Image (cartoon, rainbow, N blue to C red; front, side, top):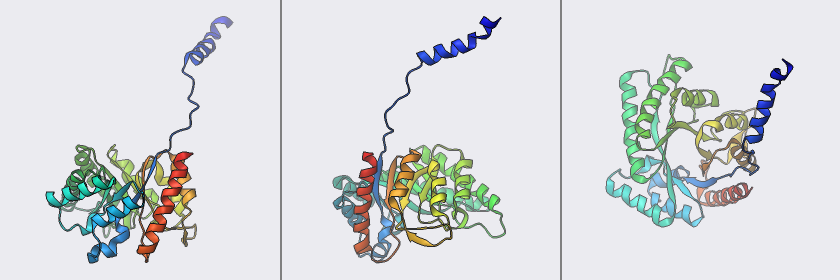
Length: 290
């Protein structure tokens, strides 16, 4: 009987010996440096700068892509979008993300339908630009609603939007950015409950009101695009210069691959954005090299 009792152990040894050896190669880290057009929001709104200008700056600084943030598009005609896509292609820059004014959490079917239609519109725009990601927002918690209700409404809109975006190979990323998605927990809840391979989180390290590093790390397993800011909050909610090497190490360990885009929100964009883009590109190259 003892011999028979030992058989399972022997079988497990045989399986272990015949199994392929675990790879000893280091995981490949593949991050790309991007620029969020919102960094030049004042200039774009005043029309002293165009989206083409942003693309050329990104190319001149050796960046990989641009998040176009569509708020100041002069129009969405085929002619304009094709021209912008051509500019990016000739500059060697990818238009990888589009930021749009969509607020997911809406309390009525009519309001939800309107947001779904807005998502469809901007997904079509992203498709024509060649962008594979669209970032949306949770919006405010509707008056009189609980957080759980607001999350459920946001999930309904994101799920329907992702069904459409997925048909075009485009991912929707809900950004942590005030209101319902001010912190990591409800933002994650929306992404998880949507249960779609075409929905995730546009993780912004600078929008979290407190415990920025810990909150950002929580978002990373669900990140489909990432924004870097020049400042982040500590455990007390005080803003301090962001520790980009620390953040990039967190991102690398999470397994995320893709764009990390600078979104500059302070003054002096003319001098600070080029400096920060150079720093971001250098740090990403170091992380990628291991």
